[in-house]
Image (cartoon, rainbow, N blue to C red; front, side, top):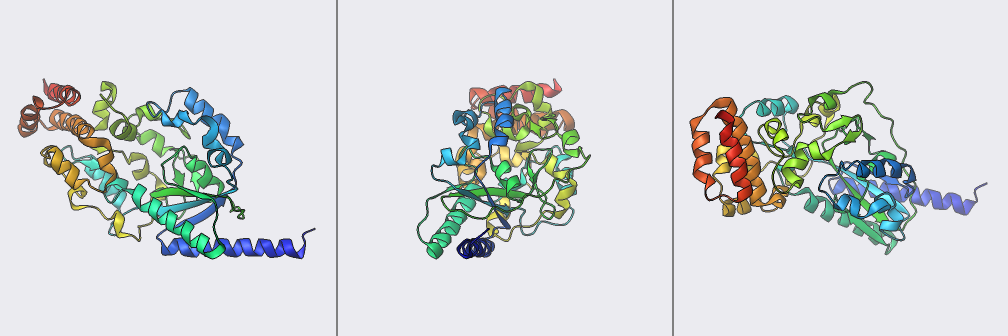
Length: 365
């Protein structure tokens, strides 16, 4: 039987959670949840995924072992995890944006850039705003032990999001929300403060397998199971060195990331628009062509990607990705200007980029 003091503590904790949600909305977050720290049930799946080598060259995924599933070991003293969702579609995103995305993928000379990367680097936006949320919390109740995460450490983000009611794990392995689709970022604050966990939501993928069927490289090897080594986002962003030839044609005109599994998802007709200008499309990434971007030198690349997530791949991977896309365009269109642009840049390119230029030029040999 609960005492009056316990009832009072519960009421205070729920009131604090309500305040957190208010402060979060003011900071541009769409949703706040709270998860506990017992993720033991996720450990077997994590171990199996790593043992299968599905993380590819992302060695940091394995470096911390099962600490990823043990918040209190990753950050000693953690009692609760505050989870946060932030929608990222630009404010001016039109209705029917999914069809627009597929239309762009069908234009071989257009450069396709993942929607999340067309504005400001989300790491910067979320990290700053999560810290501001933590500061508001401390201003209200006093100092607490905490650490902010934004895709920046070995955290089981989707697992935590699912447990705290942010959404459910879709078959493409991304978090889905009935009123928000999957077009949002996740962030967490590990705290040494006991907060009432928020209830998880039920899954609503049903028999749908659209994301599995649409994947250009069949990277979703089974529902809820992704082989990152086949994923175009991994190949164009995470992978250093040559892109395996078996995947180059399937990459099409995708030069940074891939949104196909999100473009096809029925739930994304409900995807929310961001309230922040940070995620508005930068002019250079609105509707660029492959040849326009191929003409950028390294100085131009650094200037135009300042503050963008795209800068993290560096100029050489950028050129590598463009060379693959131009090769696919050359094969499909036979546009001689494309071949001339590739030939003109070959000799001054790095060995890795040269290899991809040679492959590109061979597409209509």
